[in-house]
Image (cartoon, rainbow, N blue to C red):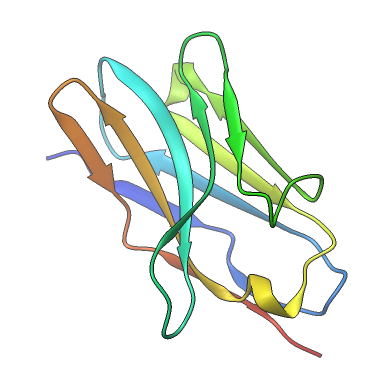
Length: 116
């Protein structure tokens, strides 16, 4: 069974940067889009950014626009999230998501803590 594995989370000071990665443990066909979501304590899970596999159309949450960059490596079924100018309110568990025909995969999440 294919799994998504996130990495790159950790503790960072406000204004700092982190890069998250998410890779599939096996071969996946027909991925329509890859994305990153996050869930802060006491809040609902929300979309951070996603990117289509073909054409590379990208959506960002307003709260991260201009600070975060999503990118993909289709050949290796990997998606990245470069996070810069991090704020306290970016603290959350970040989940990656791959979706396609008959498929909606989630990773287990990686914790990002922004604190001074």
